[in-house]
Amino acid sequence: MFINWKLKEIKLKIVYYGASLCGKTTNLEYLHTSIPSGARSDLVSLKTREDRTIFFDFMEIQLGEIKGLKPKFSLYTVPGQVYYLASRKLVLQGADGVIFVIDSDPERMEANLEAWRNLHTNLREFGQDPAQFPMIIQYNKRDLPNALSIADIRAKLAINGQLQVEAIATKGVGVFEALRPAIKEVMLQAQHHC
Image 1 (cartoon, rainbow, N blue to C red):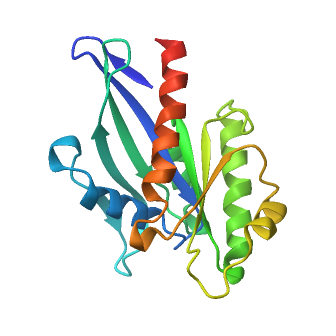
Image 2: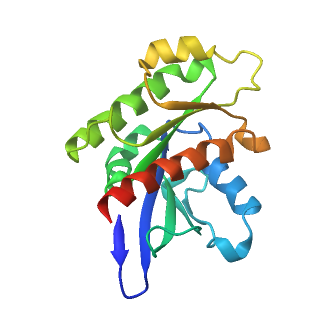
């Protein structure tokens, strides 16, 4: 959280975190096409030639008011590939909330688990308690014919207590349903600090 008293703005950061190809960028792309241009920035993506996120995707949206301040939400994605672990940590630094995107494909379960553990490790290194940190779980790709059951994913990742949303990000299903409560949680935390 960063407050610019001169501009009466509060900047808040929400990070989409998860394994490679789980749908983090797809979430931002859907939001970018759905939010009116006056309420959002351009979508900035740093990609490889294979169209994979190399460092992050970024978009900013503005809405509402907190105690006379205009909140601007910076939405980031982390790179999913394991060899970009340092980039993941750098993008997560200073986050006010996380949307953890899970790939429902059974073959991606180990990658989901690795990203989940990595997120918890990074949060602890930043002095955050993962159990108390504002986090929404988004089960993406629920339209896959072989999608793992939510119960199986929850058991494997030991997910407990966070708000959970089912999604098909390519169709926009569950995209706003994950972002709205993330914004709400982050704003509640911000109100305590203002």
